[in-house]
Length: 241
Image (cartoon, rainbow, N blue to C red; front, side, top):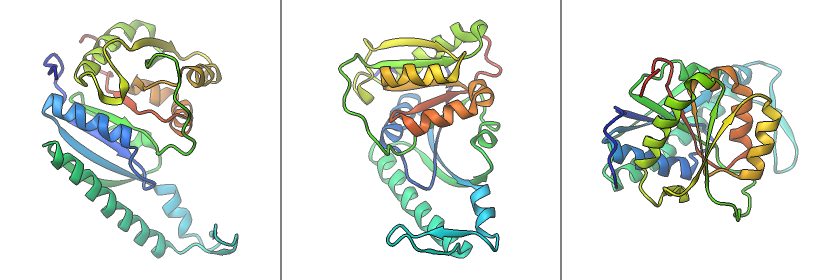
């Protein structure tokens, strides 16, 4: 595996929700952590709005077994979250230790993912990916790495940095090989972007933090609809790579 030294990535933030860790995102995070000698930091994001709503006296939940309804119990929710956090921490620990990667784990409560993105430093990058609810069939098209961007002036240095990151993956992970097709996709009309991605079925999507801050709803839809990891790079202060 080639080790990239031009960028100084010290921590890989793997962000996930209590529903679970997307295995492809975890594999990607482990590969990058090994390539850079970086720490893999598991970041469990708990929806603060949900926690507050659970404490309201009129909040109820629908039981999927019999479509019954009962009052939402905030203490029960808290126990569920703690149990799930323990399970996810164990999963992260086992896989990180197997490949010899330093790791850490913490839970944060946030109104939105943008709250956690605000704290990303230049030596960190974040990887996200929700568990696939409706996995698609394998596409006959070549694997694609999609670079989502809004600012044309900063696209070139962002593209160079993204290439360096993928070089660190080696030739096997996620079927993203050196011969994969790279596509820069500027966000002009969000609906058009999602339509294009449905056709391409990307293996990996890479984007700078400013895209999330400007187009959060689009990227949330991307996470909901596509079974591929999303890598978010802090490019706020990186005019040159």
